Image (cartoon, rainbow over all chains, first blue to last red; front, side, top):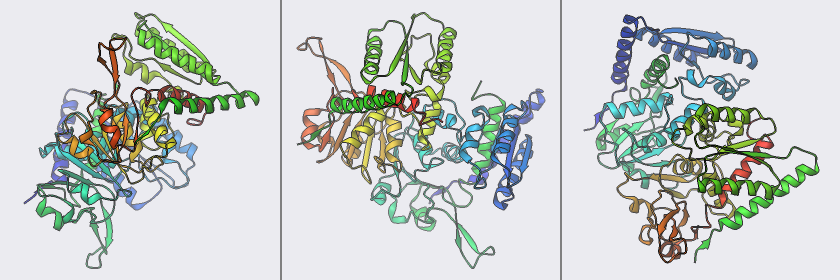
Amino acid sequence: MATIINGVTTAQDIKDEIAESVRQIKEQGGKIPHLAAILVGDDGASQAYVGGKVKACEYVGFKSTLKELDADIDEETLLQVVDQLNDDADIDGYIVQLPLPAHLSARKVTERIRPEKDVDGFHPVNVGRMVKGLPAYVSATPFGIMQLLERYGVETEGKHCVVIGRSDIVGTPMSILLSRKSKPGNCTVTVCHSRTPNIKELSLQADIVIAALGIPEFLTGDMVSEGVVVIDVGITRVPDATRPRGYALKGDVKYDEVEPKASYITPVPGGVGPMTIAALLHNTLLASKKEIYQ
Amino acid sequence: MATIINGVTTAQDIKDEIAESVRQIKEQGGKIPHLAAILVGDDGASQAYVGGKVKACEYVGFKSTLKELDADIDEETLLQVVDQLNDDADIDGYIVQLPLPAHLSARKVTERIRPEKDVDGFHPVNVGRMVKGLPAYVSATPFGIMQLLERYGVETEGKHCVVIGRSDIVGTPMSILLSRKSKPGNCTVTVCHSRTPNIKELSLQADIVIAALGIPEFLTGDMVSEGVVVIDVGITRVPDATRPRGYALKGDVKYDEVEPKASYITPVPGGVGPMTIAALLHNTLLASKKEIYQ
């Protein structure tokens, strides 16, 4: 019987710890952490994500500022809003909700954010610092996975971790974080992807599998060994007429086959997903304390 | 019989190509590429390295500037020299020769270099851009290895590359470069290190082994399979009374055992090492053409 890694309760624990830190800061008359978000356009999913972030700020006692901009804003004007947030001394960190409308360059906007305020951890400076083992904002999903491994006491030292997927926001940073000399860390790490001819052969050797390729139920029971730790990063809407919304959310892991063989496993939903907002709050708290950049 | 990958002739080819580019630039009245180097103190090895770089500049037709500073220079003064080079419009790129004397922070100096002029590729912005698949200066050793693989036509697509060593200057960037969607690239990559309990089991599965752990003759014949491609990044002085200088240079690969099983192999010396200056010249040419940063 696998231990089910519960991202909902773990994220709640982190939020409560952060709320306690904010209470102490207030008591001592310190500066209240302040997170801002830029939302361009009226995409429903993006609105919901940003709304959740604002609510989480309220929960932990952060100040929050939401800049809502028209979908047809030109890039220069958007970059001016970014510059305003860069220069606003009260704002400790901010995010630009992605995706942006097609006429705007996410890359240009991301690179304009001051690394000190880049609490999403997407700026090249933060990615590069992470690779070099320097203090850095680690982006939400990798941070969330590291927290889950740590808080559930999953042993990583000397273990073989197979990461399936090489994206720059999940697969690649996970391979870097888990291979370095740290705790969690010190794993032997193998990165597989669409051009890997023998994924099954490799995943069968894994003590830990991180499935982050975005193919629903890709990792089947015959692909893992007894006792494996499985982190499922995928979340895809799969049509399902029996569901009220007409779809089911599926991870990259065939849960009913893999769970009986696993020692630890994250469910979808309720595993890695809920951790992302907690990561953002964590980074904002670090920013307000100037713990990454002095 | 393995094909011996010759870093000396390959580096010479690259230098000759760069010299040809410079001739064309001169013909068209364009700006001559200009590389500067900061050398702090009088360490003999560092002087020799920098001297080699200056000579290589002369060979290809670059301008070069050498700033020699006293070993006891204070950090603030060194950073002022860095700022001068940042602001000098004629200088396309520059390096600060490492290691620095112990009272100076290599990290602080590296982060002060403008990323646009960081032709060593050590600034976090260049490392982060590389991870994100954006245009970046790739540091010398990883660039050199990628060039050797490419110019010798080593097939990497779908191959399993085992990288032994996780340093932020060789092991980690190699794992990133070879796993991404590019040519050379598209490898399945495994990173092993001192905490990996079963390196031999993994290296036996490898189509390509990159040995970069700094232990002389670590990779023995029984650790590799027939047909393996072996890139040896190690170079250690091992005492040897029979040699005129009292030492021999040893790589991380037990060459006489591994070479007979390999399809391609780099010797030490004469493999990866000579490629580093060619990489620096290559990055400086890119800098002068503003091909990475516009």
